[in-house]
Image 1 (tube, rainbow, N blue to C red):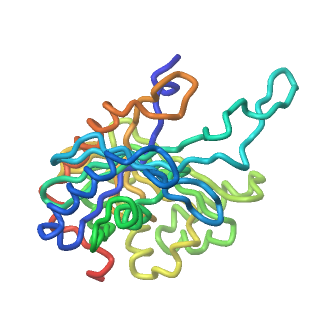
Image 2: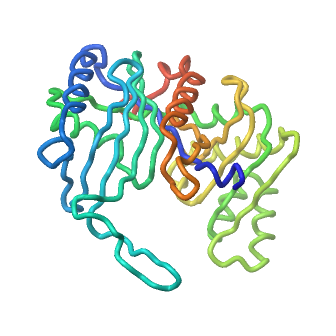
Length: 302
């Protein structure tokens, strides 16, 4: 099995807890109460309607930095098992289910970093869970952190090694406004017969200031005309951030503060993560951004 097969790329998102200093003691108390709850519907499981799935929290530490797993359990509407063309029900007991987990860390400065499992619950659901199962009143509000200026973020890349661009056919002229050469390249590509979208992957082995400037031009266009954002399907620039001193992939269309990481899978056939290594990667992503997090914007700052 290759290294790529042994890991999954997931995004780590960053949050800030409102009024964190006042909530610290009650947060730890709520997690302790959850830790002592049994695994049943009157205990640790929180039933979601109308999906009939269940939310559940596993506090892996009860001191800062808090480490916890937050998952959604499905017992109904499950897929079949296929074996040589034979389809059968999943051989699960009535009270068993499939679970999708995300890993979160809450740090003593009130910032939160968590990897997002697209099939797991969003962190906003943790607010309701802590209220219902942890008895935490008021429960914490997790505010997304945003890049203040995506143009500045792209400009901090000293050079760009890879620039990925995907657009629909009717956005060629928009791309041309960002850069004449880009518009011509996309137009030439469209004549090769792509029917749903046009994609370009531009690469430079040692990194290119020209590709960085092209990414900046697209970011400036999107910043000045935010309603046009959805006319681009994908714009990602890979390079080295000169401020954070790390290699990063900047999603020009993504305004939330985010870090993409390679998470080792727990087993070769599972998409579940190795929790110990997941926490280490999340903490590493937090440490790399720790000095800049206090200056990041939240939704209520805009």
